[in-house]
Each structure stands twice: as C-alpha cells, then as structure tokens.
Length: 334
Ligand SMILES: Cc1ncc(C[n+]2csc(CCOP(=O)(O)OP(=O)(O)O)c2C)c(N)n1
Ligand code: SF4
Ligand SMILES: [Mg+2]
Image 1 (cartoon, rainbow, N blue to C red):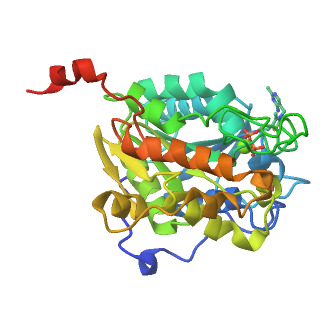
Image 2 (cartoon, rainbow, N blue to C red):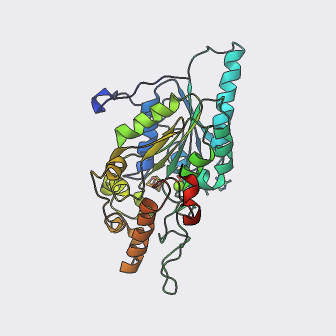
Image 3 (tube, rainbow, N blue to C red):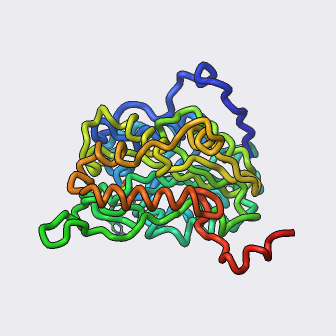
C-alpha cells in the first residue's frame, strides 16, 4: 500500500500531469477534469482501468491517449472486477518474485451507467475484499452520456434526457429520485471498505486529498464524484465550475467521507452543518441548466422540499435516509 501524504494547500500540488493533452471530450467537461485529478493525486506508480463511456471513447481514439500511466479499457459493468483482478494479479506477481515488490496504486473508474446501475454488484463485491488495495471512482454525469444522454438511476428527478423529453401530455417524464449510491455503499460495507466518499471537481484540493487518503487506506475504497456535463445538462461550458459549486452549496450534493468507519463532512457541506453558511436555494442550480428549462414554480418547490427533507429528516443528512419510527425512538436512548 502506498502512503501518500496530504497536500496542505494548492502550492503543494505538483505541476506534473499524468493525464495530459490528446483527448476529445466536450469543452467544459468536468468528468475529464476528474481523470486529470485522480492521475495527479495518485502519481506515476499507478495503473488505471476504465469502463466504456465518454471517458473511454473520447479519451482513447485513433491511437491517441492522454494517459501517461498504464491504462486499460474494461467492460461497461466491470469497474469492480477489473480493480480486483488487477490488484490480485499484482499481488501474485510480487509474491512469486516476478515483479518488484513495491506499492502500486490500482484505480478503476466507471460512469454512473456503468457503476451506479450496471456494475453495482461488482463494486459491492470488491468492497468486501479487505485484503486488496484499490480505489474505484464513479464519475457521475447523471446520464449514459456517451450513447447520447439516456437517463440512468443517477439522473435527477424531472431532468430532460433522450429517454425523458418534456412532453405536452406529461411535462415531467422522469419521476424517480436520484439513487443514493455512495450512501448505500457506505452503509452496506461498514467494517469492510476502508474509505467511501463523495467529491466534486469544483473543489480540487478536497478532491485530490480524498484520492490520496483512499489510496493510503489499505483496503478497497470508493469515491463518487458529481460532474457537470455541458452537453447533457445543456448549459454554456464556461459555467461548469460554478454549477459544480452550486450542487454542493445548495445541499444537493453533500461532500463527505467515511474513513475507517468514521464519518466526516468536508468543504462547504461542513460549513452548512456548522451553521457558518446557509444552503442556497436549489433553483439557483437548476435554473442554469437547460435540462430543467421546463420546470414550473411547483417543480422547483417539489425539488427543494426533497432536498430539505434530506437535510432535516434523514438520520444522517445526505448519507443515511432513514428516520426512526417515533414509537421506537426511545429504544436508542440509553
Ligand atoms: C454491456 C454494454 N451495454 C451497452 C453498451 C453501450 N454503451 C457504451 S457507453 C454507454 C454509456 C455508459 O454510460 P456511463 O457509464 O454513465 O458513462 P458516460 O458515457 O456517461 O461517460 C453505453 C450504454 C456497452 N458498451 N456495453
Ligand atoms: S457528453 Fe458530457 S461527459 Fe461526455 S465528454 Fe461531453 S461533457 Fe464530458
Ligand atoms: Mg454517465
């Protein structure tokens, strides 16, 4: 296992890039910034695998690649399996003396279609194998973007996608609330996974230090990032950074980590919980994106009420969605 020290400020971040030029993602793509950050945070002794999606197709076309560290494509639902296979293979080769015994980081990334939907079982399986050091990164652009923005289990309520166009008969075509993937993995793998967290590329230092903590944790780990996608979310590419910040500042995307079973909140989310900042209205985030352009006042109110519920009634805001049944609340009081 590598031990990567924390970077105390932006000046401590090295200039060198391990994910360089040569990709063809859209202008303003935040998922590609996620790739750059994970490579920078992990450093040169790293192997990356990546499932099919924008971060495969747009990054490795026509014999070009921005990856300067070893990278391998994996099947759409195979982030967990490829991470475990790579970690197990390295361990066996080192044990047999076929390669030098040294810390090598293993990172497997997937999109929300590949990870929150199709490959969730393999990610869960990898998180139960305490003897392998690996990090799985789910980059969430809230759609199957590469195949033209179909909705996934991670798409927010009411958003227009190619599978959920706003119609005249049914204005809101997507009526399911976004799946709480990091919460379900954190709650379901307590005592197995060493680190499970959320991040957003608008908070680069917080993001890269989480990657470094996860890689130094000594076990299977998982990071879920929320990535504004100008093409699928329909906004001017120059707004990507601001939209990512608004997702956190409105409380829609809480930043937290569960490290060795201990939960802590980071960045603006921590300030909101400490009472140092107020949650911004969700409308400020939603109204900047064309995928919500059909929203009425009632739709904004409904969205706000669901986010308020998450902060005011969940057992742990943004993480664990249950409330105690009032009839049983006294059972937990000592
Ligand atoms: C098993 C399988 N089913 C369908 C596809 C077609 N396909 C390729 S990329 C993709 C979208 C993946 O979405 P996501 O994982 O969210 O990544 P994104 O494209 O958004 O970056 C799909 C459906 C495939 N490659 N493999
Ligand atoms: S469609 Fe979205 S995720 Fe895919 S390359 Fe473009 S901006 Fe990035
Ligand atoms: Mg996606």
